[in-house]
Length: 263
Image (cartoon, rainbow, N blue to C red):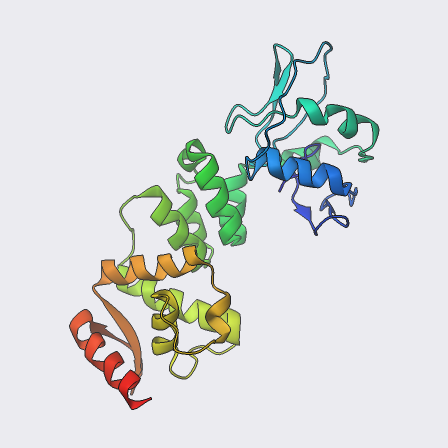
């Protein structure tokens, strides 16, 4: 979630959540309400029109877009979230220090590009899902969000965004698959290629784990990313005599079944 007053990331969980830039704390009720309205979209509370002008600069907690104040509504032009019913609490009770214009400028970087460049995979995926128009944002040299993530070395983020964008991969899917498997191994186990990584990840990705593993924490969308890349590559990677090596789907099915039968 993003801070409605400066667009910075909100860190922590209620009742200890706070604006990353100013450390301003959000009450539990305000945090939960904003999540329900702007992210989960499960709020059923109506937003009455405001009889006054709020003024100031505001940001969408869901996608960090500048809010627009028009016709009695303080709302997001990108995802449609409305903050009318939160205005009183935000003005009266959310004690947020002023932010300099230079700081505000840095906060105004397109949030999808920012998440892509910093490797925040699930944040980037959520923004891309909720605000598809942001997928058209480009970096200084015309790079898409996925290309920026790839250039920064955030393979999982790049794969998630390529999948969302439904655009042609700029790289060989085999290369991306190997790099994603290695990244998951390094991130979760601190090993460049965990022993039998190929078999463990395959079971996790295909939701048929033989036994719980350190990779059980992967969300379904991350598992789907692995499946998607494997289908594009038409195979999988195993660790051979000289490091990771690609095998086609038919060969992999035989190797994996042999390993399962061996127990």
